[in-house]
Image 1 (spheres, rainbow, N blue to C red):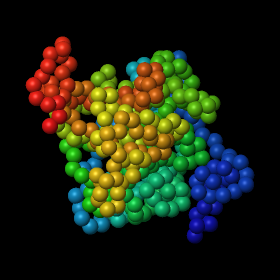
Image 2: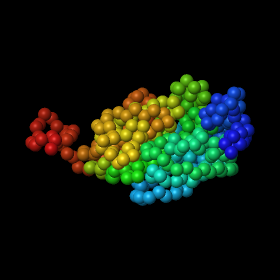
Image 3: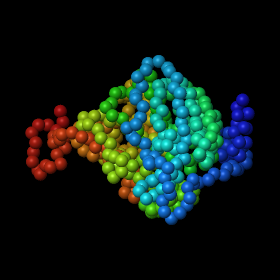
Image 4: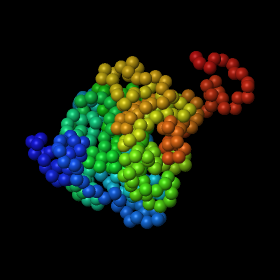
Length: 373
């Protein structure tokens, strides 16, 4: 069955050699794959868009696990190739799961079964699939889910280990597809679930490699040479320049005193994130999205971490306390990516001041009482 499935898939897409190895197969010949890199007419001006935005709402994620025995989830991911703005006046041809970047979070409990279908919509130009890092199986399911435009393929898997894991398209030009938006997170909660928090946010970092300069108006085509050189035009959260900052669709609002949990998936395809909350700290952080199997979260987490290194193809989970009203800036602390290439999200903590912890108006005056109790 395995050899037959592999041979059929390779023949259908003309894939062998290095490309087949990426897909979990083997061969001796060089890959032979032809793909179009744009869906819109090239011109000096912006292209006509068919999506208002691709930036996923960071607050739109599934509720925490509240079930205590294994269950089965039916999940469908629709592949949508769309043209949208990176920033006003700058258009780009994205590839997405469900029309958003990152793709929808899949949230399950360890031991659950997932029946997953990849639906490649008929208006698309390319074949697509999905590789989930939470799956035991060839290519993380990439071979089983590969589908041409206008078709779908399905698989079933059991979530055997807890953590936050990336999923992404894994066709031979996988770096191109991931860069253009085809990645997301599957969260496998431990059997005990995650500790309760007040607010959860979901973000995805990735690079865009285009044939025009950052901020240059018009339609930007994809630039494979820049990608090979790992020299991105933009580095962004959720697909667009400053998408969830005040200058665009943000900031995201939370209440003073909230415990805020942030999930980050780094699609890459090439750059690590140095994820830092300006004006705050990761009071508890889970490197690479790793979660304990036995429910000992306090003993498992890193404490009071200023910056979390998140490799491409990995995730992190970080929690913040919000004792004072402020605007928290979520950044990659490779700060030229913030100042020059578009990576920033903002969180407004709404409430009243607490000048024992932070007094922005102090002029050398002293305050009664301890700073810490």
